[in-house]
Image (cartoon, rainbow, N blue to C red; front, top):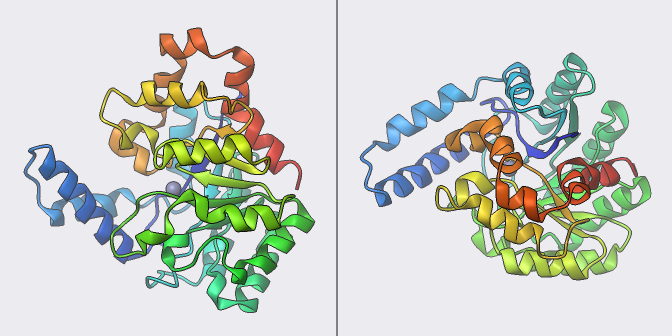
Length: 306
Ligand SMILES: [Zn+2]
């Protein structure tokens, strides 16, 4: 069975802001304290930074191989409207291009933008698509904009013309960002105005699940992914959650995604893939055709339109 991970990031301090690591460390510390574990924020932060040294994707490739993942969509979030980025987005895009060249056939890339920078950001995005052959657009609305904000329409026009999918973060994130911008339904105006653009609600199987499923079921151009599912649900319960989403009538709309490197905290990619393929309830109730669509068919269909 072909497996494509539709939601992944390079674990690198070169592409993710220091401020984001600090906020993530605070989130993890709070969660662990709630589970009764005693660990300092500094220790968690140090561990996170040490783990984010995979600048050219070699470690991710080894992790993908151990999980039998054929290829992976690398998402590049642009946090620059809310945090200081370690490098300009153009440099980060170029570095991802080199990663795709180093590992041919293994990666698709969705570059991020800060749409509030207007034409300069649009030009950089177009350059990344045209020069590097990238495959979609990644948005992080809690950085300060609604995914239906008119500042994004020129990006959507370009994505429509080039048949590129748009993936947007939905659901909780770090508390220093604007959490009023996380609900999936914020996409509805743009999804109505751009019926030919396919929008993927990242984490739709994990956060605001009912709302996300409802949108995927009723809107022809809205999809959801499973990014972060193995870590976000109470340990041992995530397969049940995944099964209920797979049974919700959106077979052609749900995309397998890990959200690596976040997945590392909950056992890594092999643990995630085997947790699905060896789960009796999933295997018995989900047809092989639906599993194939989930693991690769749906994301391939979106990417290969472009
Ligand atoms: Zn992610």
